[in-house]
Image 1 (tube, rainbow, N blue to C red):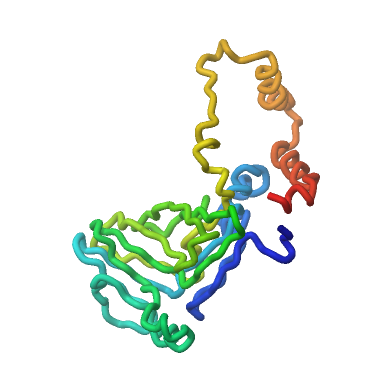
Image 2: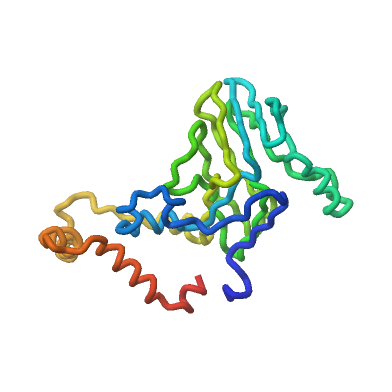
Length: 259
């Protein structure tokens, strides 16, 4: 498969107002501490692994312990979610674009789930991945959440399932509005090869249960990784980050494109 012709993922924006997905930023939108951004390649690599997706509109949500209410731009009153709601004006736009057999089949924007305080929210996107690739849908890595809710994580087989790209959340407080901004990431979408979480791979684990079982090579690696650098008072900061970045630059492009 050629990256230049066939991307790993293709996003489809159905709600015009929705912000397009963006490559996740190594600095977590400028929120990472400077020292972490400069020297901690482990943190910045995880932060940048994937794409951000956003709420399609500025949104306010309220859970009173029983019912969920919502409000968005252009609305002055709180609307009860009973049990779902369309994005404002979207149903008509969908019907105008969809073939006759799919009219009135537009996906809901918000849906109250049967579990108390649980909500499904649609990003306004759909996604299709290359064969054998799936999307891990989760909260943005290392980016402070607005508060008031937590996201469930899920792996979607987007190489065969073509539908609304949504997430489920659970409110963590009652009686206080939760704000979602259309310019602040809601989701982190990370590409996974199907084989990466197969039973065979997940069962491929070993444990060294006692320190006495460490081999000479293990101790040598520990010495070069931990002991030697800490004995050098003049060592440069970020040695791991430098080595990791050099490793990325020297990866074979052909090998990278084939995975």
